[in-house]
Image 1 (cartoon, rainbow, N blue to C red):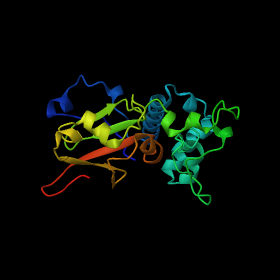
Image 2 (image 1 turned 90 degrees about the vertical axis):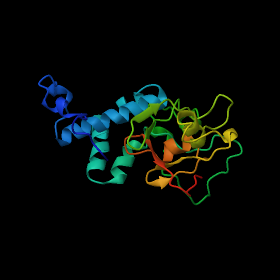
Image 3 (image 1 turned 180 degrees about the vertical axis):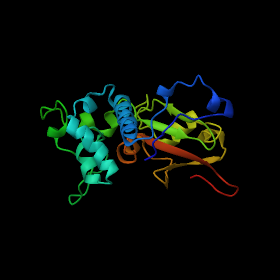
Image 4 (image 1 turned 120 degrees about the vertical axis):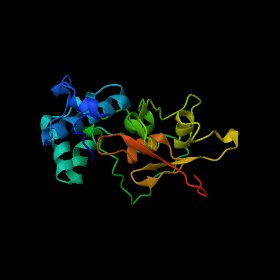
Length: 228
């Protein structure tokens, strides 16, 4: 996990300026990293569900457990709490194949783990396709970080895919199919070249970082390379 310890400095004048407010800079401490991490979790929670009830509904010991799991590289400790605030991968479409009987999804949690759950309503309420938006950031090479609202389902009822998302945000790098032009870039998520047909809902449930965000890194294709 990368934790910014100070605000970015664009030139030498900003370094020596006496008008830089000290309180805007994060102190180089573990506590500052923890606060930044928790802030990212709450922002992702709001983007997904339209509120932060899942995060604020956690006990302090549980919120501390999220950070301790990250700090100690203990996935079980982290996931014990994170599974309560992240969407599940329960299929919501009738034509979706069921999981094999012998498999157990790490993203499936008992109904009792959901804040305010009364055991009813079914799993679809917390499924990946039921979120309002998927928390996504695009990292461009030598460029800004882009952030936008990314619904899991498009207006026509079809699942929102990575290809559609990238074409809508970066049409020069990822031209629409009707343009007949090849892609000039590719997308990497969690160190893996992501297939364009990947559904944004699935990426939000299975490929998000520990802070709840799907980080899409864009790389430029070299001559002779193709994506997909």
